[in-house]
Amino acid sequence: MRYFGQNSLSTWIHRVLKGSWYLVIVGYVGLSLLLAIAFFPNLGGPVTQQISQQICASGQQDPEWQTFMATPLVCKAFVFPYLALITFLLLKILKQSESLFDNFRRNAIFTKDNATNLSKLSKWVIGFSLVTFNFSALLMSLILLLLCEIFKNGSALQEEHDLTV
Amino acid sequence: MPLNELARRIGITDANLSILKTGKAKAVRLSTLEAICRELNCQPGDLLEFDPNTPLSQ
Image (cartoon, rainbow over all chains, first blue to last red; front, top):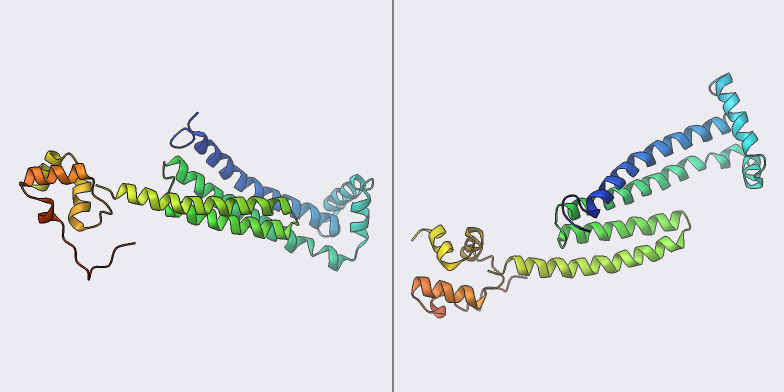
């Protein structure tokens, strides 16, 4: 199996990441709409009222959903900026990864650009892990930081190799 | 002698000869140096010089 270059594993990962980027946007818009309908059933007339009832009926067995719906509307409204922040971080992570694998598929591996990409990616992952309280992602970002240092050294060696006549 | 002819005789690409000519090269292989000296009929000392005022590129 080829890892770098055209029609390699990197090409496929690049395509998956590109598709995921659009999926996240669609998911964010869909989820925001559903939450808006659940919180404000009277906004869009009888259709949204019906959808809101269905959402609330499906969440009746879930005690966490019941507790959440019992909180005041002002508190519930904080879900929207929180969701937007998580989506923003996810999109940044996906875009940075996409850029990294785009370089891999063009056979540009040990370059300064990739080291910068990895550094930025690890910072976005740190942000994501702190916002979502996901500390396994924090461990992943540390591994990414290590990889970034390896790529920095690798790009220096590659440059020296390329400029050796 | 044109540069592309020199590059061909030394056995390096035109791009690499350009890197050498512009001083961007970080290192020169002994085999390349030997080939240049052979083709230009000179000694390595004729090609290389130490200038204490020129900082080493990082």
